Image 1 (cartoon, rainbow, N blue to C red):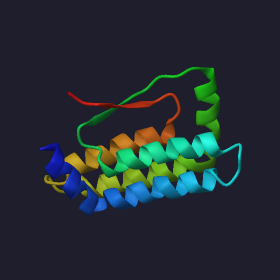
Image 2 (image 1 turned 30 degrees about the vertical axis):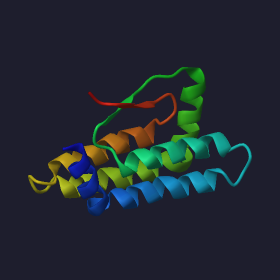
Image 3 (image 1 turned 90 degrees about the vertical axis):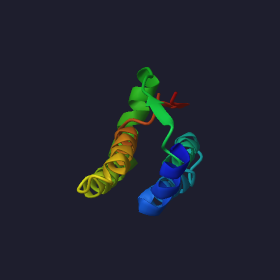
Length: 122
């Protein structure tokens, strides 16, 4: 089921989502200071390509909080809004609800990516 979901996901906006994370990572990697943030974006770009069968575990400390605040002000809010809008559009139909839920998962991740880990769902 995860394979079919991931294939349909790429067709219904997952590729656009992954590209947004990838371009955000490229912008962050322009400066040396932003490289750790850019690498985090690349990790989440791979999650955006194949989100079915994966979960996000949130955690972190003071360093993660500081990076999340900077991230939210610079990059996170536009990505979160875009993913939430895609989720709302897909939740209009019953068939699109599982895909919309994946966009909401990624929108939440776009708000606080630091201190978060992507794990396989069982």
